[in-house]
Image (cartoon, rainbow, N blue to C red):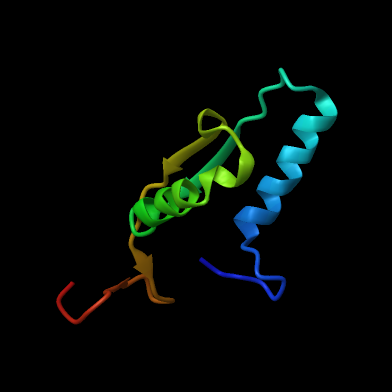
Length: 86
């Protein structure tokens, strides 16, 4: 995860704002947060949130979903490979 100079991740900063919004709205409020991941970082992102106790949010309010993956193309429309044969 990318950590800012204040030693917090962007995820933590957003979570802290959501916690504060929930406090202002009332304790019975549900404020879901949808986080789009990729197949390459989905497991690490979920683990990061779990290790940090969802930064004070309810685990049920943090919903992860993974985006699809499409090939990258160069300016000529040719597929850019990750390695020579892949």
